[in-house]
Image (cartoon, rainbow, N blue to C red; front, side):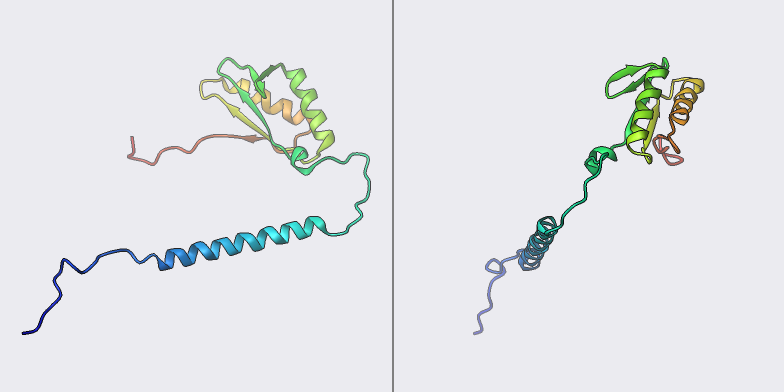
Length: 142
C-alpha cells in the first residue's frame, strides 16, 4: 500500500523570496545614491562669491495667480490689485529672469479678468505665463 500525502498537509502560500530580493535591491540603491549625493556636497570646492546669490529653490519657485469669479487676483492668499501684482512680479523677474507664473482662472470668471492677469504678467516681464486648466472627461463618461 502506497501512502500519498493528503491535500490538507500541502501548504499553499506565496513565495516571498523575490519580494525580499527586490526590497534589498532598493535598499542598496538608495544607500548608494545617498552616499554619492553626500560625497558631492563634501567635495572641497571653493565657491565664488556673487552679489545676487540666492538658493536655487527660492529663486525658481513658481508664482501662482488665482483669478476668482469676481475678478480678484490672489497670490499667496493675499488679494492684489493690478499695480501691486505688477510690482511683485517685476521684482521676481529682476531676481530671476526665467520666473514662471501660473494663472488659475475660475471657470465662472469673465475672460476679460483672466486676460487682465495675463496682461499684468506680460507688463512685468514674464515671458510665458501659463494658463492652468484641468483635463476634460473622456467622451461618453458623465
